[in-house]
Amino acid sequence: MGHTDMDVARPLRVRALTRRAYRHARKGRIRKAVVALRERVALCGDGPSWVRLAGMLLRAGSQDCALHALNQALFSYRRSGATGRARTVSNMILQLNPGDRQASRYRDSSRAA
Image (cartoon, rainbow, N blue to C red; front, side):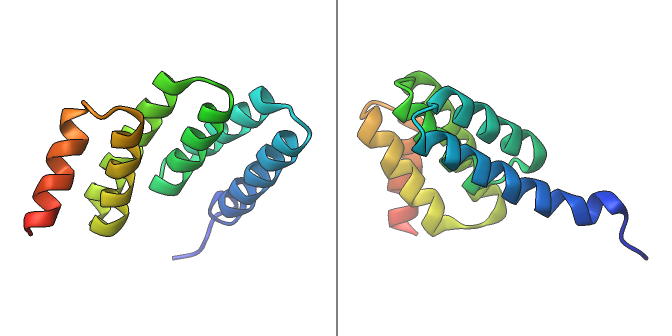
């Protein structure tokens, strides 16, 4: 089974969006950086993409949206079986929102395992 042009272009597009986001951030254009990272999330939707978006949203002062992105990252890491990364993300969520039940429940259950 051969690769399509989209299979080849997707990783290149993801890298380009990441570079663009951090270039905008370096120049102080945080909103444009957020837009580039949202596009990256739409393209691949993996845990690292959600975590990068959450970090940039925090820089933009949008804590509620950052928490949503971190919860998406937690879901992604849990689904893929990356328990260590999921635990780290749950700790990040709890730093921003100590009352978050889902993150607290996950952190406590992963310690028992």
